Length: 139
Image (cartoon, rainbow, N blue to C red):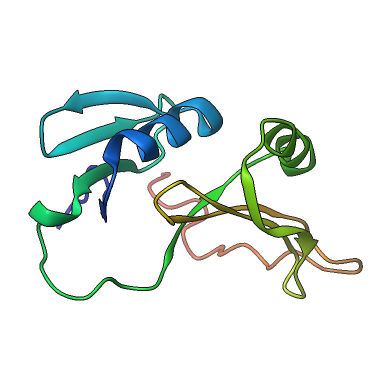
């Protein structure tokens, strides 16, 4: 199997409100808009987001708890920008025990969004590189 792209599908009550959130604050753009869904993408290869009206959701059933997480750079500046823009912050910028800075946001439909930036803890040593293929294919 070769995965060529990723789309996160989210059933929401107001796709247009979620689209505004993701386009205005997180740099997505609308790729497709129909009466039942809005497809969003970013130029940097992040996963696409499909916002589907909750009454026409692809997978019926109870809503799942969860969130969309994006690995970012410059999270402190992004946090300041988003707060200044009035975005709902549900978990303030914090350094997690595993070495990631995280920021939790919520869009108008209640979609949880986490921004995360890896920061190696003090004294951390990078994992050794796999050298089993070093020189492979050379004669």
